[in-house]
Image 1 (cartoon, helix red, strand yellow):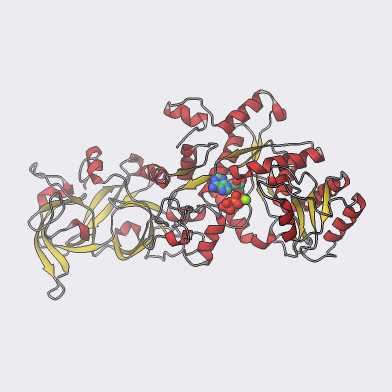
Image 2 (cartoon, protein in one colour; image 1 turned 120 degrees about the vertical axis):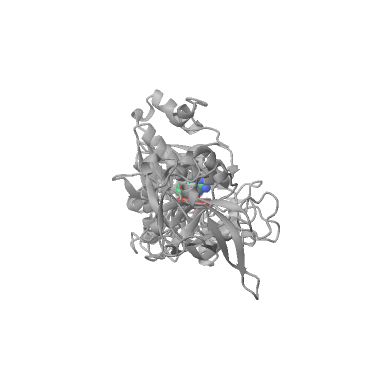
Length: 581
Ligand code: ATP
Ligand code: MG
């Protein structure tokens, strides 16, 4: 797992102090030699053709992090050269996500499309240098001529057009004189190169598609490989960090910049992309899940997108911590999603206020409790943070407890409520179950009749007598109705990218990834809870108030993650029952 990390974090936990990951090592060595005049300039270069996912977060943390640590800057640059798949909606969502993660590009928001004119000029220069030509083969023929990994490619019959003819054709391509696909501009490198990307790659193609920024001003668009290196160079990028699949593109990246003798020649460094278990991290696949209605939009809380993680209740810090923990390596691996969940728990444990909510309510009547009495118990908001204080929670004769906290016929090791058995209601009283009231026809348990021990007020034992179980509860008269959504993994298998023959990754979707619980009862302190608020329902996990579907007085809670440890452990650290009034 974590191969390496930033030095600061390592110093904090006392292990591996001072060890940098391989990219940070390169940057440190460059700084030590005063390469690039001691500057560090990085960029995060998303294509606005989908929402960002947790893999992008890794790249964002790396690029912005390295700049920050070294007194440098990181640009946000949209790589928007493929208008057919791009949109303003995606641009806006990406900006929101980067900011939310806690990073700021200040005034350095760039678009590759802003460079179209300069890129065109660079292409003209390559033609003049005899290093690019207009090819009029069909796309199919170009593919055929390219050869294979084992077999060298063949020169196009158009490869030796004169500079003058190439310049003329390229100008007319731009002017819109030709149909889409009639010609392309190609680099003139080497059709026999062992690196297929170097076999005269396409630099420009004709495409009559309206661009979300440049409208119909252009009908030719530059290809990624041509655009990316030059955009980096225009911006004075020092270290161009990208994922391993671009390793084969590096010779071309360098070739373009060398051929044009650009004053700035950034260093491309590749690192392993993040793969996360039980999900897919490919915009193409995520788009397919959205468009096919397999999920409810890009921010469906089951998705691995930043917007979905936000809606589900993940904090920016937990995502940054996760990225720090997994580190940066050169080798591809599959990261266990529990690492992400643990990062969420660690942060939420410190900051999420505790509340009581009953997800599957079972009514309890305290037959010896006065009918019209209400008591208020002081409940601790966060045992991890004394400054969070306490709140008052009302208690009365009729309550709800969790249906699973009662068994009529308890198996061994079931220590919660059962006929004749006594348990503690958290913060409140000891209660004993005397009667089980059932529906005569169906046998369903309708309510429990219990008695409480007034001497156990606050949940502490009056005479040293012990109870094994502690249940959370809400007062029936005071409870707020809520909907709760429980999420499970989106896919059934660990790596949905590995599919059996004849199968599709979508065949592995988990049919039970969403469970909606209606009729949940939560404590009244949540009556006016704001969308986006994160809480811990004691014993049930961390939840976040849904930002889309919650209504005033009827919150919808998304479960972020379940709790790792239950009350069994908590009680060791904190006195049972808490404080009382
Ligand atoms: P996808 O494969 O999801 O379509 P992409 O690489 O096409 O992703 P871009 O918008 O081009 O998406 O990515 C922007 C940056 O984020 C690139 O530098 C890319 O290398 C990086 N990136 C994309 N996916 C991951 C990942 N899973 N892990 C780490 N970095 C990633
Ligand atoms: Mg890409």
